[in-house]
Structure formats: C-alpha cells, structure tokens
Length: 320
Image (cartoon, rainbow, N blue to C red; front, side, top):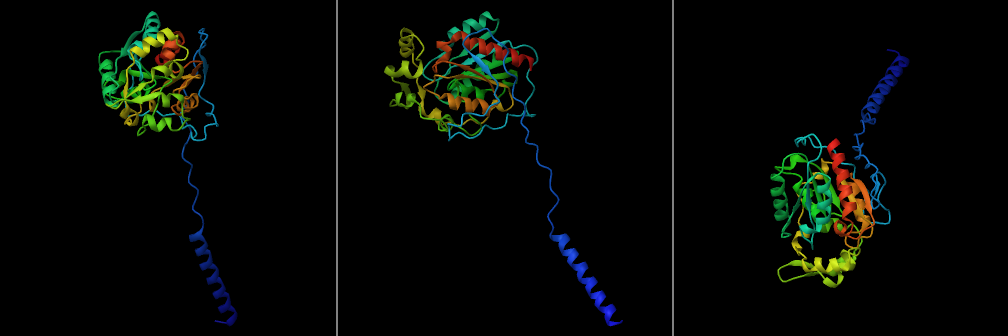
C-alpha cells in the first residue's frame, strides 16, 4: 500500500472512533414530563339569599402574608380503592362539635336543617382522644342509611377527616369543615396550627391535673364567642366540655378529604384559628369556600348562615 493510501486509512479510522465516542456520551433522549395537572376543584356554591356568607371558589392562592404557610397542594384526586357513595340526594347530616362545647352548640343549626327536610344527628364526642371521638362518630354513622354529609367544627374537623374513612364511610358523600382543622395523613392539630400565627385563645387555655384543657371563663367570650350574646356565653361556660391536651398531638391515619368533595366555612373574625390558616387548609383540600364574618363559635353566633351553607353543600354533594 502506498504511503498516501496508508495515511488516508488511518485518518478514516480516527473519524469512525471519534464518532462512536460522541454517540455514547451524548445526552439521553428527553423523557415526557409527568402529568401534574390537578383535579378540578368543586364548583362554587349556588347563589343564596342568606345575607351572612359570601361564597368564593377555591382558586386563588392563600395570603402571602403567612410566610410559614407553604403553597397549597394540588386538589385531591379520587382514590380507586374506596367504594362509590350511594347515588341520589343527601338524606342525612352528621354534626361533630369541637372542644369547649358539646353537641348542643349545634341546636340552632339542627332546627334549621330539620326544617329543610334533613335527618340530623349531633354526635356527643367525649373529647378524650382522637380514637374515642372517631369511634363515637362512626357509631352514629353506622345507624344511618343513604347519602350522608359529615360536618365538623374546630376540633371536629380532625374527627371527620379520620371518621370519613372507615367501615361506614361509603355512605359519606362529602365533608363540611366549619372553622375546622383539616389535617393530612400523619399530621396533628398542633402540626397544622404551627403553620399560622399565634392566636389569643392559646393563652386562654389552662390544663388541669388530669391533662384536660379548659378555656378561661373570663376569656371565653372575647376569644371564642365574641359575637354570641354574653347571657348565652355564660350558659356555654357553665356547660363547657374540656378536651384532653394529648388529643392536639395525635396524628390522623386517614384523610377523607383526599377522595371526597369538601366545603369550608371560613370565620373571618376568628381569634382561635386564624382566618389565614383556615384559607390555607381550605385551598389545600380543594374545598369550596364560604366566608362568614364571625367569631370561632359560628354555629351559635350565626346558626342560620351556617345551616344555609351546609344545606348548599349537601345539594352539591347530592349532584356529584
């Protein structure tokens, strides 16, 4: 072979090798991005003649004033592992009270819902632990048949979050949170409240020797029920039900709002659970939001507006 041809062969070999190296070290083909689209939030409530609540769809992000609160999570998606709820209009409404009151705190709401044709049950939870309160709620659910809505006020929101999943939960078609705590799996009440500002009611709670928390009677009106007549507040103080302090640190193991539609009544003059953290929770669970200018004890202060919002939610759940 002539020197010229030999040089040409060497150069050709070098080009082939370099091309192979380039092919092996090139960037891999781009992979398709995962689908991060969120499930649509429930439809905004129908127009209502009640003057107190003002409905707003849960589309806007929560207030950026709360630096500690993260951006809202995507709206929950249905879980195929759970059986479909019974079809048809809602027949039953189960109410779960919060701390420092008992089931009678729903009396005004019960009367109005009964006039609208619903079968209403107000659960008397013992406030001794999350497990005890969930068990009491599930006993009430077990006695009902047909489409049912679970409603929780304050601590009662934690209870319905857990109780909305379980043996009798297939009949639960939706959840209504009333100035309530809505934790995710593995979260406690304390975990959720730490995301928002310190509220006045924090310094109004006193723990007794048995570990139960009581509200200071002198602060019950200002920090818990500011728009309830003082004469009625004195009755509520006399019937006050304490809650086991350990309950606020107990974590939920199931979150019904992840696969069932929900509504949230935000109380904009609340001194117990800040309106900012209420809105953050409502956005996180993908709830339809109704705002009411009320203190924390809205079920007593604005029973009519509360009942109307629950009834509107029940109608929407029945359609779904």
